[in-house]
Amino acid sequence: MSRTSWKLLSLVALSSGAVVLPLSAHHGFQAEFDGSKIVYIKGTLTKLDWSNPHIHFYVDAKDADGKVTMWTFEGSATTLVERSGTHRSDLLGNIGKEVEVRATPARSVPARAAAETVKTSDGQELVVGGQRYGRGDKKEE
Image (cartoon, rainbow, N blue to C red; front, side, top):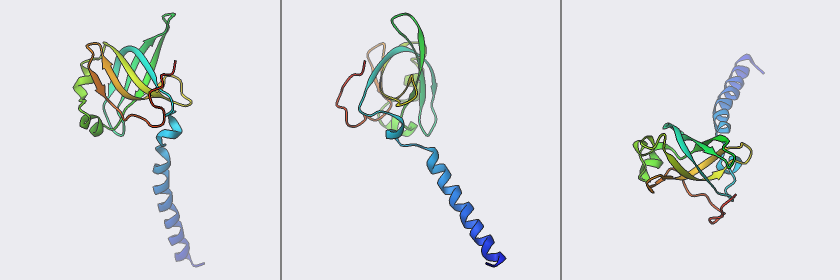
């Protein structure tokens, strides 16, 4: 093989790797979350990261013994959340307040879930993610 052919082959191989690596970095919902289950987590909304590719927010939830666990929730992309009628200010206005999050739990990471809705202390329901498939409305305890 000539030197030019090797250079061309190397360039093609490097270019292919540059395309494949970013695709493998973003996993599908099914690989990370269990769409057959749902959890309801009550606690204090403590932080919001409103950025793409997904919004993230954090809730400190107390168990029956008073132990606090920080839950990490992932929502949809900012534009999708806004199309559902929920805006950044809706969540920011509830920082430090009690909320209840309806979500699909992560398969292997404790205290992590894909959020669907956030119910505020005044009863408002904020849509932050899509309703997941295949589970109806079974509540996991």
